[in-house]
Image 1: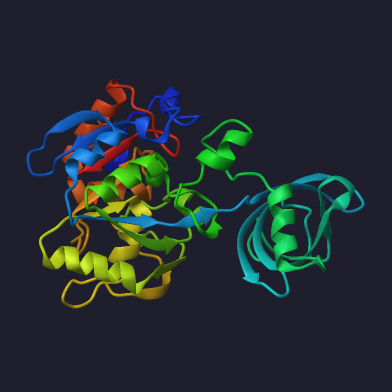
Image 2: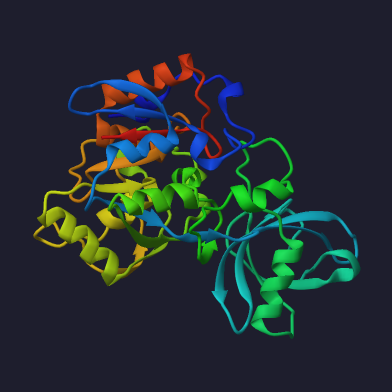
Amino acid sequence: MKLSDFNFNLPKELIAQYPSADTRHESRLMVVNRKTGTIEHHIFKDVLNFFDDGDVMVINNTKVFPARLYGKKEKTGAKIEVFLLRELNNPQRLWDVLVDPARKIRVGNKLYFGDNDLLVAEVVDNTTSRGRTIRFLFSGSDEEFRNRLDELGSTPLPKYIKRKPEDIDKERYQTVYAKEEGAVAAPTAGLHFSKELMKRLELKGVNFGEVTLHIGLGTFRPIEVEDLSKHKMDAEYFFIPETTANLVNTARETGKKVCAVGTTSVRTIESSVTASNMLKPASGWTNLFIYPPYDFKLTDCMITNFHLPQTSLIIMICAFAGYDLVMRAYEEAVKQKYQFFSYGDAMLIL
């Protein structure tokens, strides 16, 4: 299949600018059944009705950090935006970043952030046209440094959300189970789970297995090749603990469902499969790009948001549920005015 096959008409007003419901579990939920080809409309809390004792939900516990910093350049005072991608060296406070505008940000330049220059960084390397390595010149403890970043940084909302971050985003652009800091984007399927809903699922006997995949900016990077086999995903760090592997493997052995919450959970577990199609505890880097045809080894069902055209995300959904069914579901979603993307509504694929 070609990239152009994954285009569809998406009215701009359907890209959610705020969370699609006041309460996390009150978002709309489209339920798509791969066996019967049926499409049903529900509220997210209805997921309770589709899972039983012993089923496992795999959730990504990555935590979004306030990755967007606004500052100024030394001497000229020109305004700049610095997007923190990942920490390269903790003791030296070295970070891989994107700068905008990048043209005049050179090695040796100092960058100042916050009133009274609360944080200062020095550019130590050029990595790409917009990429730089910077060193934060901060002498306090690691905890003090993190607090300073929290104080000065903004929630890194995707560019598709055409507004400035607000206080609501600190809470709502983070899952209730986020704990391992390192993502520059939220695993958005998980945003629909409230603590109350998770408790009700647990009371029903559903197990939650945590994995970690630190989502990088590559999740938003457009695919620029028509031939999908030539697209390369950015590598992202993942971790699968033994406890989660045991939960998933027990479910498989006893005929229970393994439901991946979000495309990042899918990519994590499908990146670490044994020869006998069991989940292997692991940590490392994955650049797995799932596109049709793909043989899913561990994922029985999936919860995901509604994605933008021609992205690696909708391509994965088509690999899982079949191209024709997904396109029909998306046509229905547009007709029924479902909200799309990070703050949008959800889909359960059985």
